[in-house]
Structures are given as structure tokens and as C-alpha cells.
Length: 222
Image (tube, rainbow, N blue to C red; front, side, top):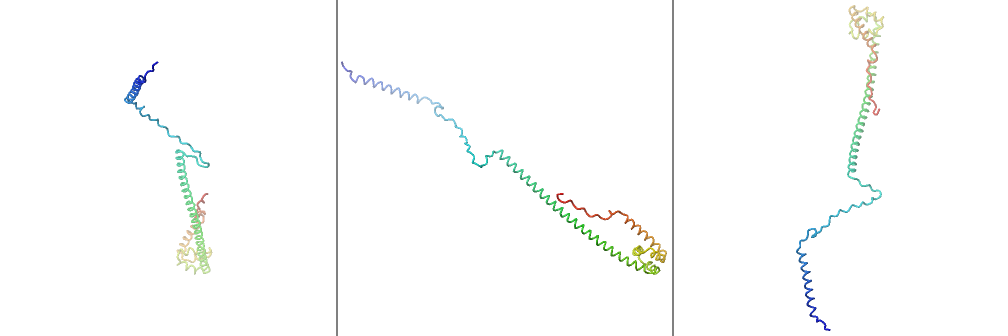
């Protein structure tokens, strides 16, 4: 049996290989010439959300986080507390000033009361000295004879004469009046009556006529 020669199989194989290569190249050219869709040309991956913040565990003894509303509330409370503290300080200052003023007024009232008592004492002492002087003068005239005293009384000033005769004993005064000039004695009697009427009216007035001591202001905190 005759074996076929290799040349007879080599040519068909070569033709088939070239045909296959041509088909592959043609397919590549067709794919290169065809338009590529945008989505297929560059596919952009969708944006990924940012990673969530991982809450770290709070350290022992650390303050918890404060939100914005809580921080605003704390700020407002601090502001109101500052205002209340300022008002309280102002009230305390006013109370302190009022207390100091009341103390000064009380001290002034006490001072005026003491001054009034000293003036009253001086006035009483002066009246006592004046009265002692009048009494001595009256005793001098009472020891004189009525005619001698009448001669002096006729020329004595009326205010002085009234004070002397008013302090004389009635029998002594009557004897002197009888020895005086009639017109002078009549005028003396009229003036003496008016003087005693005024003295009785003053004595009949209630004790409220005397000036009352000024009232003390109420004590601070009372």
C-alpha cells in the first residue's frame, strides 16, 4: 500500500490556518470599529457613604458629650444666674446703705435729744437764778417801809415793777399800793391782773404744749 506524500496534506493545512487567522483579524477589526457605549466605556463605581463615626467608649469619670441645644440652655442659665447675682448684690448694697443711714439718723436723734435736755437744764438753771434774784429784791422791798417803797415804785419801770409786786406777799403789796400815787397804783393793778390771767392760762394748758422729743427711726431689720 502506498503512503500519501506529505506535500499533499501540507497545503490544505496551510490554507485552513490562514483562513482562521483572517477570520480572527476581521473580528478584531469589527470590534474596534463598533462604537462603545458610555456606560461600558468607563464604568464609575457609585460613591460610597462616608464611614460612620465609631463612638469610642467614654473614659471613666469623663463628662458625657453635650449637644448644641443643651449647650445653649446651659449658656442661658449661666447668664440668668449672673443677672440674679448682680441684682442680689445691688439689693445687699442698698440694704447696707439704708442700715448705715438709719444708724446715722438714730445717732443724730440721740444727739439732738441730749442737746435738748442740756438746753432745758440750762434754761431751768437760768430761770432758777433769775427767780433767786427776784426773791432777793422782793425781800429788800418787803423790809422797807410802805411809804419808802411807794416812792421807788412810782418811778420804777412797769415790767420790773410787775415782777416785784407779783412776788410780794399780799399784805406788803397792799400797803405799798396804798402809799403810791393813785393813777400809778391803778395802772399797776390793771397790769398785774393781766399778768396773772396770762400766767393762769399758761398753767392750764396741757402738758402737750411742751415740745416732745423727736421720735427715733425704726431699727434696721425690725
